[in-house]
Image (tube, rainbow over all chains, first blue to last red; front, side, top):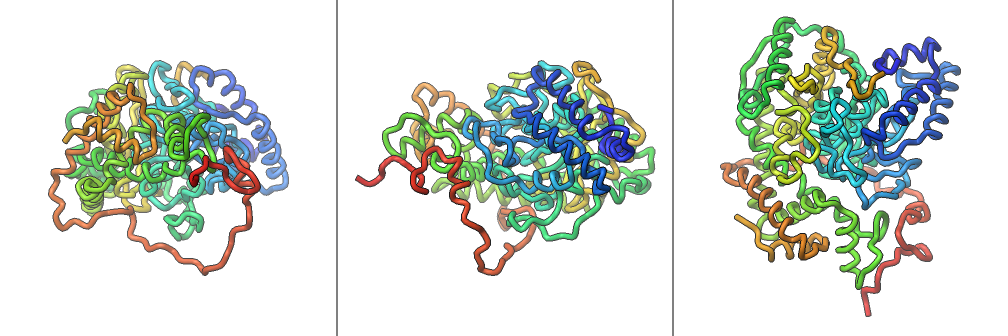
Amino acid sequence: MLNATLSELSAALGARKVSSVELTRQYLERIARFDRQLNAFISVDEAGALAAARRADERRSRGDAGPLTGIPIAHKDILCTSRLRTTCGSRMLENYVSPYDAHVVAELERAGTVLLGKCNMDEFAMGSSTETSHFGPARNPWDRRLVPGGSSGGSAAAVAARLVPAATGTDTGGSIRQPAAFSGVCGLKPTYGVVSRFGLVAFASSLDQAGPLAKSARDLALLMNAMAGFDARDSTSLERPKEDYTRSLDTGLKGLRIGLPREYFGEGIEPGVRRAIEEAVSWFEAQGARRVELELPNSALGVPVYYVIAPAEASSNLSRYDGVRYGHRAQDYTDLADMYCRTRAEGFGAEVKQRILVGTYVLSHGYYDAYYLQAQKVRRLIARDFAQAFERCDVILGPTSPTTAFAIGANSSDPVQMYLNDIFTVSAPLAGVPALSIPCGFDEKGLPVGLQLTGTYFSEARLLAAAHRYQQSSDWHLRVPKETPL
Amino acid sequence: MSLTPDDVRRLARLARIAIRPEESGAVLDRLNRVLGLIDQMRRVDTQGVEPMAHALDVVQRLRPDEGRESDQRELFQSVAPAVEDGLYLVPKVIE
């Protein structure tokens, strides 16, 4: 049961083979058994989870259950919850309990899911390894010496270790897809505006999107059915009719045009990653998909552009942490300005401070045009590359990350080396298009490799269908790490 | 272009972040590495390109100008570091 997909769990709950309370207990036991080593959770809510599971079981016996009713989940600790603290991985919000629930939290609760706890993450989602968390690094269940990726590393590690069947994450430059790849699970970043950002602690508002992490593409689709939809409380939420993301799952691959950007298969990709990706591409071709060679000439500029725009927006968003209305406040200070400066010096970690300083610089007088405005212009060039590519292909395939998971501490001394991990993931949020990562094999060290599928705006159902077909004839997504046996 | 220790002090002041003198060398080094990365995009010819502020071309929604929120001051202030009589307490700013 612990390795079952959401649809299998849902069927078992429906057939009364298992109750939500029993399922919830099983997962809570696994958290108690393994999370001391993995540090995937910041908060675990045993009592709240069991109460929610009882409510779900009652709902089911009333005949009022949906596909997710009674399914245990976890949220990235960036999504506000009124019953559990929301730390954002930061000392600044260490004891913060939100007065309200995020839209995504409320929708998944309405669907009847059972919240087990909140997952570890890079502080304010700034990182690619979950090492910048105030609560210590999360660890990769495939090898505990390695990072699980980031920033949604706790969510990815928890799903990989089968501590929870599914979790939420957020993606600003790759923070759902890269940890999904490093941890051997599936993760989807939706089109910008499809999932409400209400109650999502803001990092870079023009890029942030919440999305699901789970074991299979079908599971992602089921979660998206609950998470997506218009919300008037987010000014960038799109007014679109509700979609059924499972609707095309059984579509075949014949005639699907798969785009292979030259830039995604160049230098700097580990041989084990390249081999797994090329094998996946051959599989798609064997199913009747057609290969389209193309170029995304500005993709190398994605990382530099991202590291202007995201810090700029962050420096503005994070100015709200002033020690006045909520969050940490320094003990000793001389006057108001000193209170701000000390509160922020104590409350933020080194990476967050560094990004705020970069953002402050690129927005400051005399530099705005050369940095921020220029970055916004190059951002349009990147979006145009995608628009042109999607005239010739339906889905772009490539590696999610140039490497598999790296060792804890390996990239901490040089920020640029860390940032370059995001080379294949930053472009989708800059353009606003959807992208997902699924497991497609292992490298010679036995570490999972992620295959990234990128599509044009609102093509989530098509991406999920292609991923689902792949998973119908592979079992990479069902492999369980040896360190966390079932 | 490289930042100087003076630039770091100025940015820290603008960002309201206290930086201890013993940290400033490491901060400067890391900022300069990041700016080195960012500089790659400054050389791109973007003449005539419209800046892209947002992923999708959508206009802001408007709603009728009617009050919708109820008074939740107590709830919101329950998470504040220091409040009194419904007011947030801060160090004295006017002598």
